[in-house]
Amino acid sequence: MRLSRLLRAVAGALCFVAALGAAHAEKVTVAAAADLKYAMADIAQAFEKTHPNDKIEVVYGSSGKFFTQIQQGAPYDLYFSADIQYPRELEKAGLAATKVTPYAFGRIVLWSPVMDASKMTLESLTNPDIKHLAIANPKHAPYGKRAEEALKSAGVWDKVEPKLVYGENISHTAQLVETGNAQVGVIALSLAKSPQMESKGKYWLIPDKLHEPLEQGYIVTKRGENNAAAKAFAAYMGSPEARAVMVRYGFVLPGEVK
Image (tube, rainbow, N blue to C red; front, top):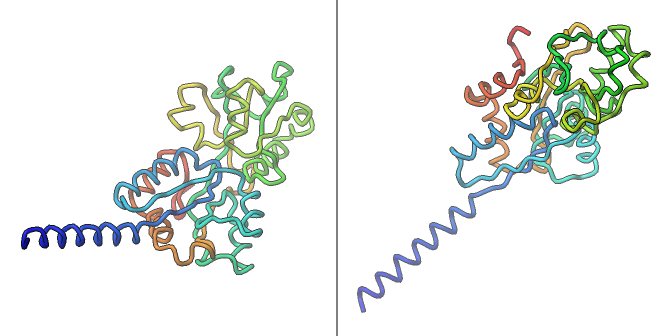
Protein backbone atom coordinates (compact mmCIF):
# COMPACT_ATOMS: atom_id res chain seq x y z
CA MET A 1 0.00 0.00 0.00
CA ARG A 2 2.77 2.39 1.03
CA LEU A 3 4.62 1.58 -2.24
CA SER A 4 1.45 2.22 -4.25
CA ARG A 5 1.04 5.67 -2.66
CA LEU A 6 4.68 6.42 -3.38
CA LEU A 7 4.32 5.47 -7.04
CA ARG A 8 1.20 7.65 -7.34
CA ALA A 9 3.08 10.56 -5.79
CA VAL A 10 6.01 10.12 -8.18
CA ALA A 11 3.67 9.91 -11.16
CA GLY A 12 1.88 13.05 -10.02
CA ALA A 13 5.16 14.90 -9.64
CA LEU A 14 6.27 13.85 -13.12
CA CYS A 15 2.99 15.04 -14.61
CA PHE A 16 3.40 18.37 -12.82
CA VAL A 17 6.93 18.79 -14.17
CA ALA A 18 5.77 17.91 -17.70
CA ALA A 19 2.90 20.37 -17.48
CA LEU A 20 5.22 23.05 -16.16
CA GLY A 21 7.61 22.48 -19.07
CA ALA A 22 4.75 22.63 -21.57
CA ALA A 23 3.49 25.83 -20.00
CA HIS A 24 6.90 27.43 -20.55
CA ALA A 25 7.16 26.23 -24.18
CA GLU A 26 6.37 29.01 -26.62
CA LYS A 27 5.85 29.32 -30.36
CA VAL A 28 7.28 32.29 -32.23
CA THR A 29 5.79 33.32 -35.57
CA VAL A 30 8.29 35.25 -37.67
CA ALA A 31 7.56 37.32 -40.78
CA ALA A 32 10.85 37.39 -42.67
CA ALA A 33 11.96 39.00 -45.91
CA ALA A 34 12.42 36.36 -48.60
CA ASP A 35 16.18 37.00 -48.86
CA LEU A 36 16.46 35.31 -45.45
CA LYS A 37 14.97 32.05 -46.72
CA TYR A 38 18.11 29.97 -46.24
CA ALA A 39 19.97 31.95 -43.58
CA MET A 40 16.95 32.19 -41.27
CA ALA A 41 16.25 28.48 -41.60
CA ASP A 42 19.78 27.70 -40.38
CA ILE A 43 19.56 30.24 -37.56
CA ALA A 44 16.15 29.04 -36.37
CA GLN A 45 17.37 25.45 -36.35
CA ALA A 46 20.41 26.37 -34.27
CA PHE A 47 18.25 28.37 -31.85
CA GLU A 48 15.82 25.47 -31.35
CA LYS A 49 18.70 23.17 -30.44
CA THR A 50 19.53 25.39 -27.49
CA HIS A 51 15.85 26.15 -26.73
CA PRO A 52 14.19 22.74 -27.23
CA ASN A 53 10.88 23.82 -25.73
CA ASP A 54 10.42 26.70 -28.17
CA LYS A 55 9.31 26.53 -31.78
CA ILE A 56 10.24 29.07 -34.46
CA GLU A 57 7.81 29.22 -37.37
CA VAL A 58 8.97 31.45 -40.22
CA VAL A 59 6.82 32.84 -43.02
CA TYR A 60 8.82 34.26 -45.94
CA GLY A 61 7.59 36.93 -48.29
CA SER A 62 7.68 40.53 -49.43
CA SER A 63 8.68 43.06 -46.77
CA GLY A 64 6.13 45.54 -48.10
CA LYS A 65 3.28 43.06 -47.94
CA PHE A 66 4.20 42.03 -44.39
CA PHE A 67 4.23 45.72 -43.46
CA THR A 68 0.63 46.06 -44.64
CA GLN A 69 -0.43 42.81 -42.97
CA ILE A 70 1.02 43.84 -39.60
CA GLN A 71 -0.82 47.15 -39.84
CA GLN A 72 -3.98 45.12 -40.31
CA GLY A 73 -3.32 42.92 -37.26
CA ALA A 74 -1.53 39.89 -38.75
CA PRO A 75 -0.34 37.48 -36.01
CA TYR A 76 3.44 37.89 -36.29
CA ASP A 77 5.68 38.12 -33.22
CA LEU A 78 8.80 39.24 -35.08
CA TYR A 79 9.22 41.14 -38.35
CA PHE A 80 12.47 41.04 -40.33
CA SER A 81 12.36 43.52 -43.19
CA ALA A 82 14.73 43.91 -46.15
CA ASP A 83 13.99 47.65 -45.95
CA ILE A 84 14.55 49.09 -42.48
CA GLN A 85 12.08 51.88 -43.21
CA TYR A 86 9.10 49.54 -42.89
CA PRO A 87 9.73 48.54 -39.25
CA ARG A 88 10.58 52.16 -38.48
CA GLU A 89 7.13 53.15 -39.68
CA LEU A 90 5.55 50.44 -37.54
CA GLU A 91 7.48 51.70 -34.53
CA LYS A 92 6.19 55.22 -35.16
CA ALA A 93 2.66 53.86 -35.37
CA GLY A 94 2.95 52.14 -31.98
CA LEU A 95 2.93 48.63 -33.48
CA ALA A 96 6.38 47.64 -32.22
CA ALA A 97 7.29 46.39 -28.75
CA THR A 98 10.99 47.19 -29.28
CA LYS A 99 13.17 49.69 -31.03
CA VAL A 100 14.15 48.84 -34.60
CA THR A 101 17.37 46.82 -34.69
CA PRO A 102 19.49 46.88 -37.88
CA TYR A 103 20.71 43.37 -38.64
CA ALA A 104 22.28 43.42 -42.12
CA PHE A 105 22.85 45.04 -45.47
CA GLY A 106 21.80 43.00 -48.48
CA ARG A 107 23.44 42.86 -51.91
CA ILE A 108 21.98 42.19 -55.35
CA VAL A 109 23.46 40.06 -58.11
CA LEU A 110 22.79 38.95 -61.65
CA TRP A 111 22.15 35.20 -61.58
CA SER A 112 21.47 32.64 -64.28
CA PRO A 113 21.41 28.86 -64.59
CA VAL A 114 21.69 28.96 -68.41
CA MET A 115 24.25 31.74 -68.99
CA ASP A 116 27.57 32.51 -67.32
CA ALA A 117 26.38 35.46 -65.27
CA SER A 118 29.83 35.82 -63.68
CA LYS A 119 31.04 37.30 -66.98
CA MET A 120 28.08 39.65 -67.39
CA THR A 121 27.39 43.26 -66.44
CA LEU A 122 24.13 45.21 -66.44
CA GLU A 123 24.92 46.33 -69.98
CA SER A 124 24.88 42.66 -71.01
CA LEU A 125 21.14 42.61 -70.33
CA THR A 126 20.50 44.65 -73.49
CA ASN A 127 21.64 41.65 -75.56
CA PRO A 128 18.71 40.63 -77.80
CA ASP A 129 19.39 36.97 -76.95
CA ILE A 130 18.10 37.72 -73.45
CA LYS A 131 14.33 37.70 -73.86
CA HIS A 132 13.25 37.86 -70.22
CA LEU A 133 14.80 39.37 -67.10
CA ALA A 134 13.30 38.71 -63.66
CA ILE A 135 13.27 41.25 -60.84
CA ALA A 136 11.16 41.49 -57.70
CA ASN A 137 8.18 43.81 -57.93
CA PRO A 138 9.52 47.29 -57.04
CA LYS A 139 6.12 48.35 -55.72
CA HIS A 140 6.48 46.31 -52.52
CA ALA A 141 9.77 44.37 -52.63
CA PRO A 142 12.93 46.23 -51.50
CA TYR A 143 15.14 44.11 -53.74
CA GLY A 144 12.99 45.08 -56.69
CA LYS A 145 13.40 48.76 -55.84
CA ARG A 146 17.17 48.39 -55.71
CA ALA A 147 17.20 46.42 -58.97
CA GLU A 148 15.29 49.23 -60.68
CA GLU A 149 17.67 51.83 -59.24
CA ALA A 150 20.73 49.90 -60.44
CA LEU A 151 19.33 49.39 -63.94
CA LYS A 152 18.50 53.09 -64.19
CA SER A 153 21.92 54.11 -62.84
CA ALA A 154 23.56 51.91 -65.48
CA GLY A 155 21.46 53.58 -68.16
CA VAL A 156 19.82 50.35 -69.38
CA TRP A 157 16.35 50.58 -67.80
CA ASP A 158 14.53 51.78 -70.94
CA LYS A 159 16.07 48.98 -73.01
CA VAL A 160 15.39 46.15 -70.56
CA GLU A 161 12.01 47.22 -69.18
CA PRO A 162 10.07 45.43 -71.99
CA LYS A 163 11.87 42.20 -70.99
CA LEU A 164 10.95 42.33 -67.32
CA VAL A 165 8.99 39.67 -65.49
CA TYR A 166 8.17 40.42 -61.87
CA GLY A 167 8.41 38.17 -58.84
CA GLU A 168 6.17 38.67 -55.80
CA ASN A 169 9.29 38.66 -53.63
CA ILE A 170 12.97 37.97 -54.15
CA SER A 171 12.61 34.22 -53.56
CA HIS A 172 9.84 34.01 -56.15
CA THR A 173 12.06 36.03 -58.51
CA ALA A 174 14.82 33.45 -58.16
CA GLN A 175 12.26 30.72 -58.80
CA LEU A 176 11.23 32.40 -62.06
CA VAL A 177 14.81 32.11 -63.29
CA GLU A 178 15.28 28.56 -61.97
CA THR A 179 12.18 27.36 -63.82
CA GLY A 180 13.08 29.02 -67.14
CA ASN A 181 10.54 31.82 -67.09
CA ALA A 182 13.48 34.22 -67.37
CA GLN A 183 17.03 33.61 -68.52
CA VAL A 184 18.58 36.00 -66.00
CA GLY A 185 17.42 37.53 -62.75
CA VAL A 186 18.43 40.25 -60.34
CA ILE A 187 18.28 38.36 -57.05
CA ALA A 188 19.69 38.50 -53.53
CA LEU A 189 23.29 37.45 -52.99
CA SER A 190 22.05 35.49 -49.97
CA LEU A 191 20.01 33.26 -52.28
CA ALA A 192 22.73 32.89 -54.91
CA LYS A 193 25.17 31.72 -52.21
CA SER A 194 22.84 29.07 -50.82
CA PRO A 195 23.90 25.45 -51.43
CA GLN A 196 20.57 24.88 -53.18
CA MET A 197 21.32 27.51 -55.86
CA GLU A 198 25.10 27.73 -55.90
CA SER A 199 25.35 24.47 -57.83
CA LYS A 200 22.76 25.53 -60.40
CA GLY A 201 24.17 28.81 -61.70
CA LYS A 202 26.71 31.61 -61.45
CA TYR A 203 26.35 35.21 -60.36
CA TRP A 204 27.83 38.68 -60.81
CA LEU A 205 27.81 41.07 -57.86
CA ILE A 206 26.16 44.36 -58.82
CA PRO A 207 28.19 47.35 -57.53
CA ASP A 208 26.36 48.82 -54.54
CA LYS A 209 27.21 52.35 -55.71
CA LEU A 210 24.46 51.90 -58.33
CA HIS A 211 21.63 51.75 -55.79
CA GLU A 212 20.57 52.88 -52.33
CA PRO A 213 21.72 50.64 -49.45
CA LEU A 214 19.60 47.60 -48.67
CA GLU A 215 19.66 48.28 -44.94
CA GLN A 216 17.57 45.72 -43.11
CA GLY A 217 16.03 45.76 -39.65
CA TYR A 218 13.71 43.88 -37.29
CA ILE A 219 11.27 44.53 -34.49
CA VAL A 220 9.39 42.51 -31.94
CA THR A 221 5.80 43.42 -32.74
CA LYS A 222 3.16 44.46 -30.23
CA ARG A 223 1.72 40.96 -30.54
CA GLY A 224 5.05 39.48 -29.45
CA GLU A 225 5.51 41.88 -26.55
CA ASN A 226 4.87 39.21 -23.89
CA ASN A 227 6.43 36.33 -25.79
CA ALA A 228 9.70 35.55 -24.01
CA ALA A 229 10.81 33.20 -26.77
CA ALA A 230 10.36 35.94 -29.38
CA LYS A 231 12.62 38.24 -27.38
CA ALA A 232 15.13 35.44 -26.88
CA PHE A 233 15.24 34.72 -30.62
CA ALA A 234 15.66 38.43 -31.37
CA ALA A 235 18.61 38.53 -28.98
CA TYR A 236 20.04 35.37 -30.57
CA MET A 237 20.34 37.23 -33.90
CA GLY A 238 23.24 39.15 -32.35
CA SER A 239 25.06 36.02 -31.23
CA PRO A 240 28.35 34.95 -32.86
CA GLU A 241 26.62 31.83 -34.19
CA ALA A 242 23.84 33.76 -35.95
CA ARG A 243 26.22 36.42 -37.24
CA ALA A 244 28.44 33.72 -38.76
CA VAL A 245 25.47 32.30 -40.63
CA MET A 246 24.54 35.73 -41.99
CA VAL A 247 28.08 36.34 -43.22
CA ARG A 248 28.17 32.91 -44.85
CA TYR A 249 25.17 33.87 -46.95
CA GLY A 250 26.73 37.12 -48.11
CA PHE A 251 25.09 39.62 -45.78
CA VAL A 252 27.14 42.59 -44.59
CA LEU A 253 26.65 43.13 -40.86
CA PRO A 254 26.18 46.57 -39.27
CA GLY A 255 29.49 48.15 -38.34
CA GLU A 256 31.50 46.04 -40.78
CA VAL A 257 33.21 47.36 -43.90
CA LYS A 258 31.04 46.93 -46.96
